[in-house]
Image (cartoon, one colour):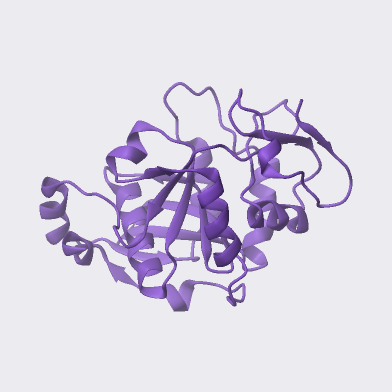
Length: 241
């Protein structure tokens, strides 16, 4: 049985997570900033549907992108990017990105796990400088993006969407590009799926993942807006990344 959480932002060891369903560790608690940050620092994330209690997960293995390798883009897509006028920024449209992610249909999934309570909680994390959005623009029009949580020098991706074909790929590739420049080695992608594998994600044993998280999440990186630090990245740049 998964652990039942009390009022304090404390979690059981991830080694106690269930094998079936893979990674279910705990039930209950809240989505306060202290609890969410405690969860991410220990390789745990919330994932539940409307009508369910809050469920906390730490699957084994974990799906990750190595920023050194970047994101795998097809030759055809790279050729398209060379002619693209899209640009990528961060933390200028967080609420719009998370709303778009919540409304994007997912294969084999009814409704969304990004319920109103989750949107409110991650909005508070964003206001506190911990949650970030990466946004793809065609002029001033948002055409794709992603959001996630940064703790120390570790990024935990939560969801992405495409308003136009390729929008989410550009957001993810731009994120990997910037994090590689900053010396952040991993993007947590949580759970394996075919789409992520095609873009170059790989599995990592939870024990190895937790060693990286322990080191990176404790790095001296103050929470802040990424708008200035991320800057503007022209999508065409990613054609050669």
